[in-house]
Length: 274
Image 1 (cartoon, rainbow, N blue to C red):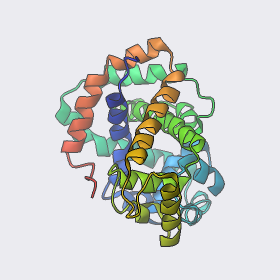
Image 2 (cartoon, rainbow, N blue to C red; image 1 turned 60 degrees about the vertical axis):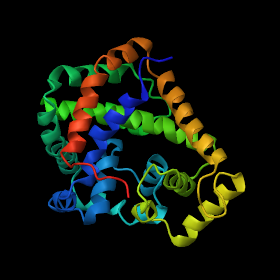
Image 3 (cartoon, rainbow, N blue to C red; image 1 turned 90 degrees about the horizontal axis):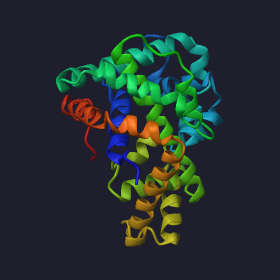
């Protein structure tokens, strides 16, 4: 069994993804020329890949309705400079995690260093979002370094997760329907990800055919087991690309990362599901 537990991945996920819940995120990206919350999200998350087209964003982000992506990309690349988007992205990461990091009392410099030292050791094959992030210049400040390291590792497991979903034959809508049924995400996830009622219903029907949802759309025992198996397979796929020595180094800062992530949540940076 790996020394790197799933709680480690939950911690880096929290440190990375709280930027997407920032109340002022829309205004932040509009200040550099982008239009609306979703354009800021897609542009800022995709920018490590260069200036990708909508098909690449749909493929690498997976769970979003294609129409939602097409409304933002490629228009974003005509409205804002790549360097401006990158700078806004890192400033947002610093600003959002700062209160929690400070409240945690953790000395983040050595923690960030461990995360960053892990990145060159990762097997990046078939992990495009992680590769894009690993290839970025490393910030000079500790907050920026911490957020960058956590982000690259979060996208690493995320890329592995998408490979598992593809192997299971789960498209973006089915994956989201199953997450909602399992109580693992927001009840309004359909609206967040941009799926129409018809698309959502079709995804639900496909899961019923598998026996993963019942007639009322509730998750079945088989569906729950399948969802757990997907997470287990994601863990295996993720860890397969991380050398044992790196896993050990990351495990040694897991407690600090958990303390930071808990303090970030306590700061109100992450909304609860509902």
